[in-house]
Image (cartoon, rainbow, N blue to C red):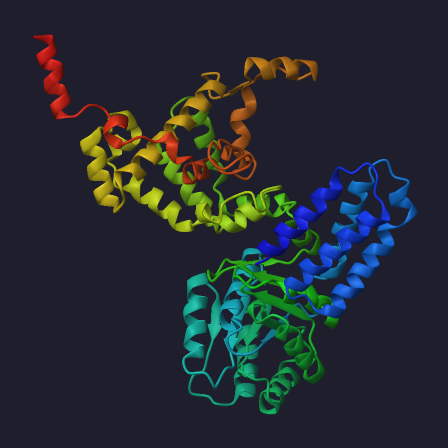
Amino acid sequence: MFESLSQKLAAITSKMRGKARVSESDIKDMMREIRMALLEADVNYGVVKEFVADMTEKCKGADVQESFTPGQQIVKIVRDSLTELLGGEDGEDKLNVSSTGFNTIILYGLQGAGKTTTAAKLAKLLKENGKKPMVVSVDVHRPAAAQQLKVLSDAVGVDCYIDPEEKDAVKIARDGEGRARYMLCNYLIIDTAGRTVADEELMEELRDIAAAVNPTEKLLVVDAMIGQEAVNVAQLFEQNIGMDGFIMTKLDGDARGGAALSIRKLTNKPIKYICTGEKVDAIERFYPQRMADRILGMGDVVSLIEKAQQNIDEEEARKAMERMMSSSFTLDDLYSQFEQMKKMGSLKDLVGMMPGAAGKVNEEDLDDKIVDRQMAIITSMTKKERRAPQILNASRRKRIAAGAGVQVSDVNKLITQYEQTAKIMKQFSNGKGGFKMPKGFAKQAAKMGLKGNMGGMGGLGNMGGMGNMGGMSGMGQGFPQGLGSLSAPKEDYGDYQNAAPTGRRDRKKKRKGRR
């Protein structure tokens, strides 16, 4: 969503980063470019005006003018100002907690904002954090709304209360609360009805539900795709019902992101969660500073590591790292890495968390279908072929391509990338499952007081699975090893007849030559 804004702001701040002297003209030009970038991103005009004025004042301060690195000081001011706009360094992202131990969360929002899916996502997130949630649907207007929530809750393993025959939303809410208390749940998430337009009838129903269950948290689910209208919706709900915060949905879309940057400032209510996809695990807590870093193209390594810790099997990652270092890395290991990488989210999300990656990777190379295609190729191989790729001759590659529904050239690309990775890892391996520094690097390391042979590096897999995300011959530093095969240069691969071992006709020629 913030791709266009991120590229522009990253380009603007990069101009200032290396400046040894910063004039008022430089600051004026930068502020004009930032103003245009924010307005094009659909940020509210009043918010932009105040934001730029505040930054201009800070950039002209004595701290910047007297600094040895004024350009970097200005970049820091932009980062801090953007963080403040999104909610401050700490951020008010924590849910309110009742002193009784039982908490009720009501989700509001217009129809189509994604309340039902968000209810299941939030329940799953709470469950993973050691809570016992229950979800209840009080939407008596939309057909099959309750059944949809039941299906989603069953998928995430969370208790659900629905009563499709009952038409009184307030009664369903009370009954759901009673059921949750009986089941010893400590969180109740209520999915309310929505409208295409927030009318008085809807507001009256929502007020009655809130009065009946006395919620500890009232969250408005906002569709980020509707732009500045999201701010108007938020202000309307705040005036009629009152809110404690927002959940922004569809942040994986192609909207310009102005709503997320405007809504906190104009309503003075925090964004507590963001949803970045349709899957039930595509929800995360909102951290203003991390989002500011992403928007400025600085990446979000902390969130990336957290995703790895949550989704990657540490033991499997450690074993894969040991196999790589002992020169026994197979295509089965590569397949396992693709699987773990998919669990972490879409490629675009992962790239957005990589420092300095914004705008430097071709969007076409970040299609998740490419990973599925690579996995299909490996699946089409026999066990023997996966463990010994060197036996893949032309006829075998044709069969694998047909089985995976791809071209033979796609099979060649995967195999070539695998061979390049294995070769690189062999150079760094000490043959005992450990890591060996190259000679040139070893000299530099010696000057720094490091040992030339780091045998314990095989245990990097214990770092949340991040240790085995090294070799990136295709997409640049910091990307998972498996990602390298997604965008390696086309010229690296020849025609499959040339790349593969000889066929039947060539073997005949070979025998004739022996005679």
